[in-house]
Image (cartoon, rainbow, N blue to C red; front, top):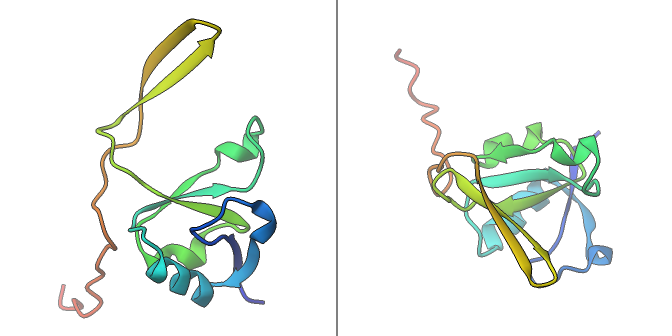
Length: 118
């Protein structure tokens, strides 16, 4: 049984264009996309459910076999550990700063598989 994940091309947001892809297909799409590691891994569950908050961070292609599928991969953008929740009701606007994940190294994490001397 091969692991599959739901992926979509970079030029559409139409969920009907999603297709089941193998790990090899996912790696190829990531390599061809204008995105860089790290990625946030999100379930395809609608917001408001407990499942929708089960997210992970994918630092490099070595972690793809550990993700739960189907899922959505989004490029992780560093934001200095702070995000803003903005609520608008008519002419009223509320902005709440919230702590978030820390900045992560950009680009694919390099594994030193040859470092067996330790």
